[in-house]
Image (cartoon, rainbow, N blue to C red):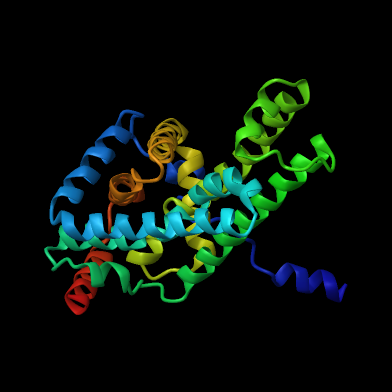
Length: 286
């Protein structure tokens, strides 16, 4: 009886007003992704030197990683590492988000300000970065295990031999199918939790889990435009890889600036308090 009386005293759980799935839906057509790309290009060519220098840093870092894989005999994870780059790219692009934010606010732009970014959420952004790095490592390990499951202990045939091995045997085709499925799941999950989470943590004071949850909700609720955007990202990255990674010097800044505009379009209108806080932050960081 005591338990029953105590249960009666517990207030019922009332869902938050408006906390429904429709909160995350935006009236954004799939073609809007091309407008984000155009807005990113305009940010790139306004004060282009910092953006291109940022892209050059990304290219040099990527080139050193690829060179290290060959130098230490880990070339067998080259393809998983290249695809895994897309997993950690959102955190690597934070300086480009900062430049776009500064351009909109009329604040000065410099490479130093882009590299030494101070996110409004503080260390919360490091948590998301660490999670993305762990996802990338997990994907590379999964790729190695998939190769072992399909080809046993057969040594890696090298870059010259791996394509014939994959394309001229039923085992190779099966591995490509399963690997694409598994890799697609990794890519979809990392894209969903990070594409809007990193910009939000940069611009707003929130926690990492909330930012990742909101990012996933916006992606899931706006699939047509987000699938279009993801296809653009993958296509431009493939062009960069085909160019020996040199394309990253331009493509990475372009996609970084465009992602910021995608975030602005999808997060919805700001409240007056948010706008005032943003203005104070911009003035303090200028």
